[in-house]
Length: 223
Ligand code: MG
Ligand code: ZN
Image (tube, rainbow, N blue to C red):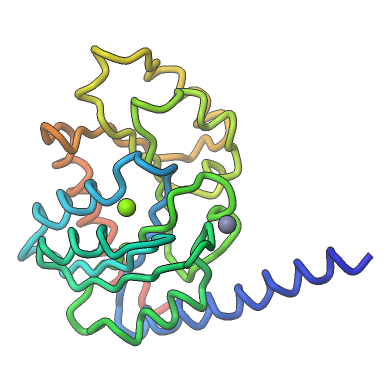
């Protein structure tokens, strides 16, 4: 009897905190992307390559969510982007209060675009708003091409799907048409990018889109 109200209260409190994050980001004209995937799809590598390509054109900051270790944040910091690590100590997703605390530790004046790299998990991160503008889900050709059918909520709440590791297509049984079909069945508005962080294929198209996305802040800051 009490269970449902308790869960609702937690999510309501999270939404309140997400609203606070959204307000802070708006005050600094920062656009934010909550980037999610299963473990090992290549979120951190995608961010490394993206930051390197957009250096000098866009101020990018990163909040790294991991269950343990600062390894991913160290990698991002090494490419020269302001980075804050959140260690969730067992929690399988980020929550808005963690992002709110992380914002205190980053120089927001330097940032146009903030990536929030969520914990590698295709289930519950979909349910927690972090105050981001959009959610991006990353899949890779070394996973099953039926991920969107198995984890529909993740694809329903995302605006963008990035398919990574396209260089491995000759070596894996991954049906590109099937993954797109499954994903678009769940969310017909989904924008899809195909990239290989290894050989660079598709990264220019992805980065061009990010530049356009980040520039929208000038239009939407007044909303
Ligand atoms: Mg990572
Ligand atoms: Zn979780």
